[in-house]
Image (cartoon, rainbow, N blue to C red):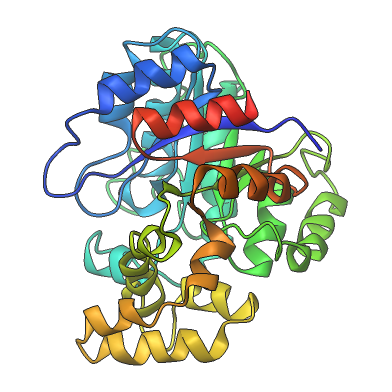
Length: 344
């Protein structure tokens, strides 16, 4: 079994900021957690809360899981990364993801097509900003720099600020096989949004393909796999699973369209095709409660640790034997303490 690190996943906000985030961040650092992560969808942004809560810490890494590509130009993302890295004393980790067409086109008003090519170009520009070797230019079609046309007065620029680190770790969120291969090729790590320790073999080929490409940054030995690991402690397994059924119904049924939903595809690859179709049909019919009710407990148990303490401790062995290098945990201070007791 490898040594698993623990990360605290704060995610994005619901209707209001979480009341206990500062307490959770402090407890995570005290317990020896490696990292703290924030996210964004179409409400709270990922960077501001990370800076605010991270200012109370001194040792945990501070990461975004994820910043959405379409929310910022790549140079703006590079500026934010070098700023937060300075403010945190070199603890920033940049997690990036394309999001989906609903958010990209509906919220950001940006085109969704060619997500792989856009990601490659975006990361390349961010790395130029951070390296600060020369003025930033990009000939690609998605983020051309300087801007073609316009006034004609644009010129290549180099960041005024000297980066604290020229090479901040970049972690990519990826679900499809081609995207996973891209992460292995150009990034320092990978977020599989739904991680099943018993169903990750199918990604081995994609990861190996990425690592074998010319110029790949990492090998399997120094590549981070940061796995979301939801935990609910309850003597009643079904009641514990109930905490995740609505979330899985939302992602499988509603986060995307019937013809394009990457989360749906992940559960099909895990062997839940019939169940995923039933969930999606009910959800898209507006019957969200029914969709949640038909999420099988076995599906929840594939991607989460739910039930009594002893069951969770026993099942952790499977996660320890997986390709995960960090488990991202959300929950109460009691949950954080239990996971630290089991793993740290």
